[in-house]
Length: 287
Ligand SMILES: Cc1cc2nc3c(=O)[nH]c(=O)nc-3n(C[C@H](O)[C@H](O)[C@H](O)COP(=O)(O)OP(=O)(O)OC[C@H]3O[C@@H](n4cnc5c(N)ncnc54)[C@H](O)[C@@H]3O)c2cc1C
Image (tube, rainbow, N blue to C red; front, side, top):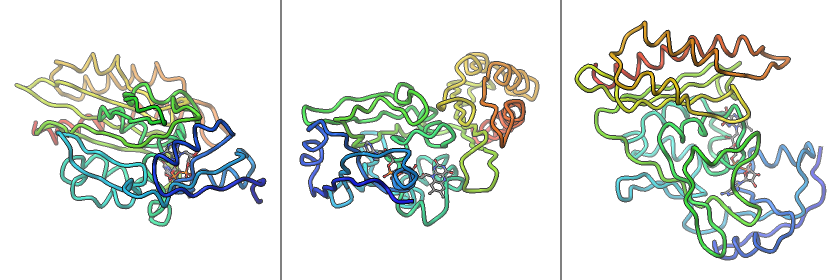
């Protein structure tokens, strides 16, 4: 398949990108092209114009700023995965990247493109919510800061407007002693997840504090398990409480029934993975 005809712009500075986006035609940003190009080839989308951002200078950074890790719009998955800052401060992200696509795709694909594509089974939207990331969404008139928990609206849908671009993701560096874990089940390693579970927490005087849990593959976008977080907050860690919250989360989930995998099986995956993730996170929190 070939895409339908489109205009192509390849600006070299961010202001020009934002200027093009503000012109009002049916425009899409081309970042790594790992999701957009297949969708265009299958004619699932047919934008009138592509704005290729690959030659824009200074957007491919991963850097530490004011207690946060800032990741620019052109930082590729592979570079983020290998970044010493990520390995040191956000090891949950480095671990999750082991599950995302394959080296060739990770060499081109970008974190910001991944988040804007907003596949319901994608791992990074769940991780951004667990880590309390902030999205910097920009247009010619200025930028706004959107918490990850408010960024994803549905399948392939985010709050980024037609005249806007996700220019940066900011992730707070977790406090020392924060435990973390990430697990998923997919048909093959590198495929989108049937069920992904990610969590961070701390253990203070034998009690769980600040638990954050997010899941993907179970709804039209990744979401936090806020009711289960509330139940875990202040609880003594143990198999019983982990099983209780996992059963409650599975009961509350309303996953899709697809030809490949049933809703019941996805619920079973959540029931199985969540206790494992919590046990591993508690272990890493030094308990
Ligand atoms: C074989 C294969 C396996 C894969 N497996 C997985 C997987 O297991 N998990 C997973 O999460 N992903 C997977 N992916 C997708 C991969 O992670 C993509 O890189 C990612 O989804 C899109 O990033 P991109 O930079 O290629 O974006 P593009 O394809 O260039 O763009 C995707 C969408 O985002 C928009 N966009 C891009 N950048 C911006 C921006 N800065 N601001 C606003 N809009 C923007 C584009 O206009 C487009 O609509 C897979 C892809 C392939 C081909």
